[in-house]
Image (cartoon, rainbow, N blue to C red; front, side):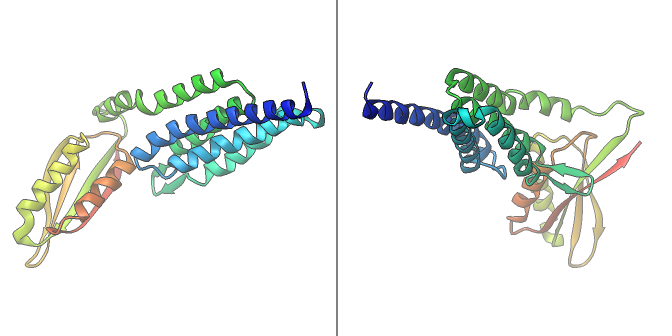
Length: 237
């Protein structure tokens, strides 16, 4: 094979590997983007393609150390990237699933960069399955009341509004929680004045998602009838 033919073959191989990383990382990122997570389409594509590029570079420089050392450095780097999306807010830790998805997407890119395109596709399928097919099971388990005697997390969503808007605010509060499939134990007036009323919806004992509750309060705050919407969690036994 001539030098030109060899260069073309290597270039096509590189394009195939990076292209596979781009497409598979894009599929994972699209699911994240639809759910409006911090690390979405662009982030997952860049992680996948970047990992593939580094691993492919290690393949091309095999005599100087090879893919194994490159992969080790990439895994370490992804660890720092993943740590950046994990946030602790009080008793809530957010971003763990996003960090795990970043890490898994890097593995997809590593397979693609090594030329193992079938394995890359299989890994991407399992990552997508973990983020989509397992969600109904997780939601079902999280919505179940905790066994009596165990520690319970009590979640409440609070809204404040003008007294005249209280009926509408109550309906909006119930509708938003119903839309996210959170069972409501009760909605009560916790404080009432001449100019402001505070309503609190207490959820059935469950493990709620901080991201869901943030989205619920954001939607409630978008309504003119509601002055402010927040959520709280307390632990009882």
